[in-house]
Image 1: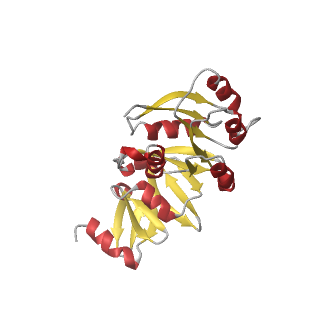
Image 2: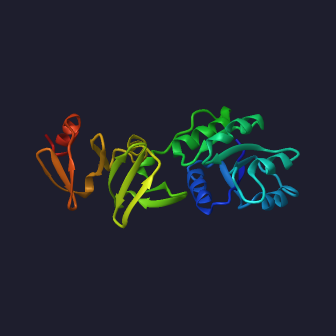
Image 3: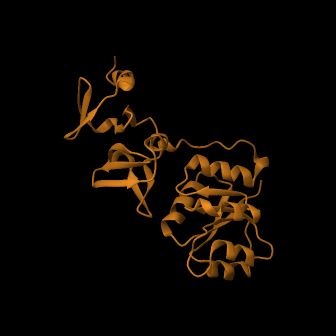
Length: 231
C-alpha cells in the first residue's frame, strides 16, 4: 500500500509533537508539513496536496473549519481539538474522525484505521512501553517521564499528579490515568491512589510510603499489593 502523506494544522507546537510521536508508530504515515495557522496551510495547498490533515479547530484569525471550507478538494481530515461542542459541524463537513484532546495512542490508531479501513488490523504498540506521557494541565500539555511520577491522587473528575519536580492537576479521572500509565510500573492501591511501584519506600500494614507521603491501601486492593510483595 502507498504511503499516506499527512500535514498537521494546529497553533500549539506541543500538539504537533504529540501527533508526530504517535504517527512514528505507523510506517504507512509520512509527514509532509507542519502549519501553525490556517493561512500557512492555505498557501501550501495552492501548490501541493496530501492524503490526510490533522486539523485543530480553535486557531487565531482563521478557524480550522473556515480553512477546511476554503479547500476545493479537501483530503481526508481528522479533527484534533479540546472542544467537544464542534463535533457535529465536523461530521457535517465529512471529517473522518474527531479526536478530543488529550487522546491516547490507541484512540489515534483507531482514527488511522478509519482513514485506511482496508489495511486490516493495525498492530498497536503498548503505550505503557513508552517512557514518557503527555498530560494536560492548565490548557497546556506537559510531558513527564513516567518513572518521575510518584503517585496520582483522585480529585473528583480530575487528578493530582505528584512528580519529582512538583504537582500538576489534569482533567482526567484516576481510572483514565491508570489506563494511560499502564500496569508495568503503576499499581492502584486505593480507589483514590495510583502509585509508581518503583517509588514505594516502605509498606506497613494497610499503608505504604512514597518518599515521606503516607498512602492508604484499600481493602479491595490489598491482594494486588500482596502480589507485589510476593505473597
